[in-house]
Image (cartoon, one colour):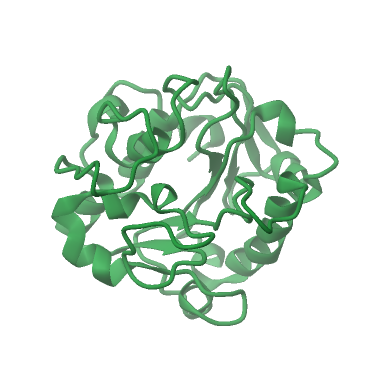
Length: 264
């Protein structure tokens, strides 16, 4: 399970009094201290989401919607389905399945499954509203122990620390509180307790001048692990594909894997 937060550098999260829960996770489980998004810092969010899920930014350096970027190349969503598995892109505040335009706090550029044209049929089934901690898709799948092979979780514009009209002023605290509401539930679920689930919390990018970002690894076998190994979103994709026994796409084939430093 990948949970993608937004637009904050390493030092804005690690050690921040606004992020007590994230810092608790960082010290109790695993944290990468030399993780860089792996693409130009002057490019905005979308390229990161495409990089994490396909091994390339496809040359994207804007935040335009899927109509402007109909991507036909291979990607992890296609790989998972072709291998016989299922995936979900749980999208917080989504007004419906596979929504291809922004709607309030739902920002389509943070929902990568919507950009891959070859996956439109699966997108209509599997890029779905996240729901709440008491009802809805993620709650129900966690409680039933039926999380799919691959999950990408896209919090809304307030909960992912991006910020938007009407969001609380402290973006970091808002995201931290959202994670505090969800992670204990996910970790209490049958998939995590059975050792079938690793949760990666990362950020799309850092600041306008540096993409040094925090990345946390939460898994039953990871305890008090810190690595200074240089890693990127390509490393995250490689680890994901290795775990799912899928071919390595794009930059994942050349990047060090996120897994070994954490014993995974």
